[in-house]
Length: 313
Image (tube, rainbow, N blue to C red; front, top):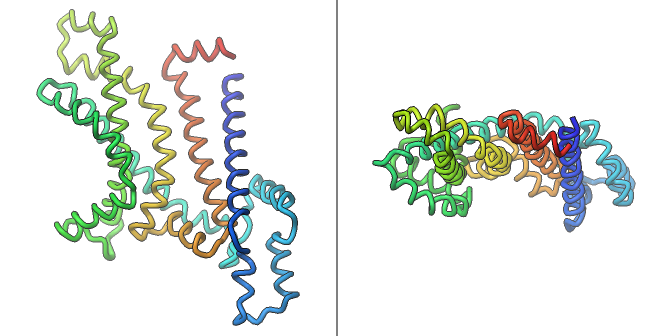
């Protein structure tokens, strides 16, 4: 229980730091979103009406009071109102979030399938050349910008080969290229970690004993090595899934998909601080919660860590 409470406390501290950083940076943005939106002469609003709007949006008070008001609102699930549309931000997030979570989840599943397939295929002697390729691929794929990869996939698979339509695609067809855009960059580093973990497990004494008893390569790999080799990759998988939420925002913008990406793009153009702050905090929350779940699950999957956690507590 002490171990759990310590991890939960660390997650709360990280979320508070993320909220504070987002608030400070957004407050430092030039201009006033309310004034930009409502001081337009075409609206014909009087100074008194604009002052009332500033009071309604809570931007007429000092920054420290705005910070406390926003923090308390977030704790209640109240993200305020969009300056541009007047819609509650919580409703806008609720409408945009499912599409982004679907895209990120599918991208994660495809990335794991690719990584596991590549890692385990590389253990067979005839495919050992894959190991050499994996030494270069992670740094290459991670350094490739998501938007550039998305544009490249559209150019190749849609415009050149005509295999996937990007103009009015169906529900399934419209997910193919965005999911690949998310999955490909993270599959290589995950596969590299798996390969190193497999190599390390193969050197353990129990694997030598199983081999000495005449077990086949296939049996040793899938019955004795796989379970132990997958554990070190679990932490990295949690981190990568958290990053997928941010990558999904960019990917949605490239492919014109409805979700947090389009919502963020519109909020940036309109300097809609309430929406931007909600998106940043939501992304940070998902990232922290996933890594918290990984931290809590890891000792359950590996008894050695459970013993260490109990001793540390």
